[in-house]
Image (cartoon, rainbow, N blue to C red):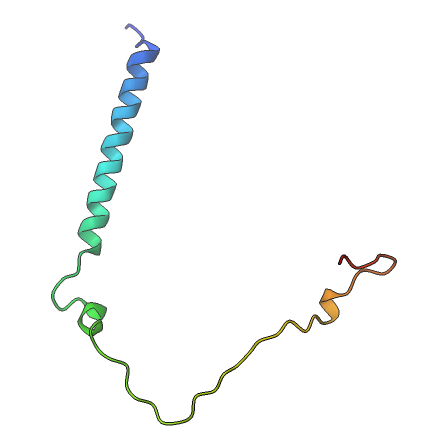
Amino acid sequence: MTSRSRRSQLVIGILTTLTLTALSLAAVAVLVLPRAGGGFADNAGCAAPGLAGTAVNVTATDMGGPMMAAPEGREACA
C-alpha cells in the first residue's frame, strides 16, 4: 500500500470541504424557503392593530448602585 503525498491529501481535503459546504448550504436553503401555509409566513403582511391609550417616553439612566462601588481599599476608576 502506498501512502498518498501531502499535496494529494491537501487537494482531497479541500475538495471534501467544498463539497460539504455546498451540501450544507443547499440543505439550509431547502429548509428556509417559505412554503405555502408554513406558519408565520402567512402573517408577515399583517399590520399592527391600533391600540388605545397614550404614548409615553421612557428614559433609562445608569444609577450605579451597590455593585458599581469600588472594593474596599481601592479607588474607583474615573
